Length: 254
Length: 254
Image (cartoon, rainbow over all chains, first blue to last red; front, top):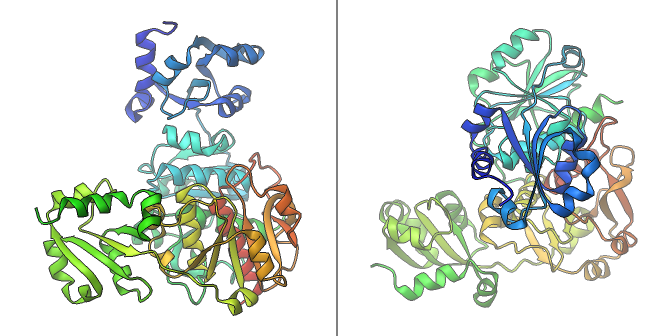
């Protein structure tokens, strides 16, 4: 066997948040995502594990990996969290994202308040990336960004976004002049107001939304107006984030 | 045991598309969704299976069920497709949705071209419902709407939407004067054109998009403009549907 039992155990342990935190590492899988990480200057790769064909094809790119191990498909399956592993897996350092104050002061950022579903977080990171929103702040109890479901569903968006875990109180304390808007069911229509060119858009928990105490601290409460015939109670939080970001980007102009 | 083995087997068989088609039935689970179905005039309920407490509480509503069976929580778990069954499950007739020609002529409709992920279909039905889009047409190879994952994720939106499986060719043949627009990566920005007040919005497959041959038959190709700094290749199809529907609804006015 080309990979030691200890290493296999180590890789599998990173599926759990406590071990990701202990080692400050995360896993990304598959051809496309691994190539993106290899080409990202921000991410240090500790270990790349791949089938021979893949490793041979990308040999020149692998210099930045501290270690490369060639394995069989059967071995890859043993360490993969995917149903169908795809040629390669990397173990990389969780990047330290810093806040770029000038950008937060002048542009829109997102604040995720207790978002729980990894799929929703992945979707939101893709939206941030699409609309060039550079900062995604997360409440301490928002699900882990480096959960493998999030990483696999972001399609590399996490590499281009500054994801910073911070309490909303600390964020407001640091940026007292940046207005904050919460997406709620009974706010002012996003299409019936002129929103500023900078701000923090707060998106709340999938079932509970934004807590009342937090709503009271925001500069404004905004809503995606439902159609008069609508029977729905809410949109999915990823969809709502997309609609509001699209409106912000195409109102403030470029 | 309060429920026969045959009935249990029948209920469990409905998780498979071939049996849903054979019996023309689907399953919906849980307190909230079951109540919505009970209150919908469009849906005939063949069988309601619930724990005693739930059945007693809603007894007056249960007259419309052909049969009601009280079961233990353990029995409910045996037939449920959910990890944590929630008090009640209904077996109902798959509704026959007809096309309201006047609405298709005068309003926007959706056409789903080979959408594969049940979660995406559920999200899109919620969007249609939110924005009052009454018709959701599906290509023959779009995933089954009555798949339990779709039903559970739509949160009742499927009760208020006319979902009709039809080839795009037949749809165009039936509505030759209704313009059709496809969401693609390199089309004209939805914010830089005046779209009509009626039309068919075509959303394509998660990875392949809209086939070239089909694109050639459309009235126009439209795009959600990415931010200049965007590194992404695409948005999730549910998010893209939400953004375009929001733009359509808030451009054409109400």
